[in-house]
Image 1 (tube, rainbow, N blue to C red):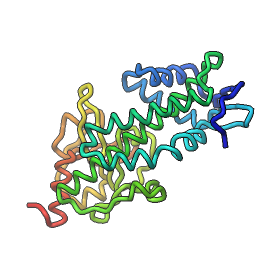
Image 2 (image 1 turned 135 degrees about the horizontal axis):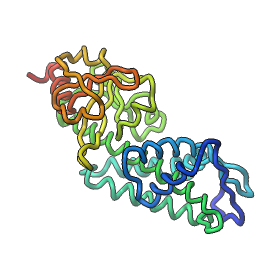
Image 3 (image 1 turned 60 degrees about the vertical axis):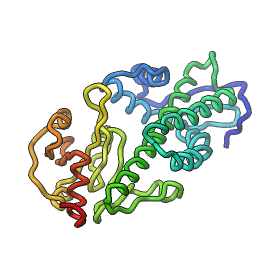
Length: 275
């Protein structure tokens, strides 16, 4: 285990396949200048590659992934989730909470002696830690928002316990009428996970600039349980076709995309709670 003592010498070893284009988007994320779908797609690829990047110190060799688990996940995750669950308005108050913990990560990084002008590649480690922290924090904030909304809407469901580390990493986030579901903050997982393993996915889409909307992606078998007509469409333009349920084919998989509120209405009807 690496200690908090400042290092007199550090080195960053990058994994095979990590090139200048990857470095550019990782630094772009760090300084808040990452724009456009292509840049984000390259960033997703870059941060995945950095899982196996190494920090080399007098104490040993440590992968970026292991450092994230030790410095961020083990030390901050439970505290963040405990505070998150106490927020009256997660959508409005969540970003400030996430940012406070992000500043702690920067402080820890600096105290360990890793902010080094003679090792500019160390910025990649800082960007990596902040990126995965942001994904963790925003992802669970959205889960809390969804769970609260479903309860307020009267939808019956079972959810994993966020304060139980073992349950937190359960295969699915929630179960609705026997269907296993997951909650996602972006559509990237559709490209990254083939085949999709859950019956449905509650997803936050970004459209028309920074406009956010919630949709539910369902496998055809899950849609058949809810039932209803669909119109053909494409993932890139599906927001323009909502609230009509849209049947798409993406990465060799057929899916039905439905507006989140419409999905809730149909689930309530399925559960005998709606018209």
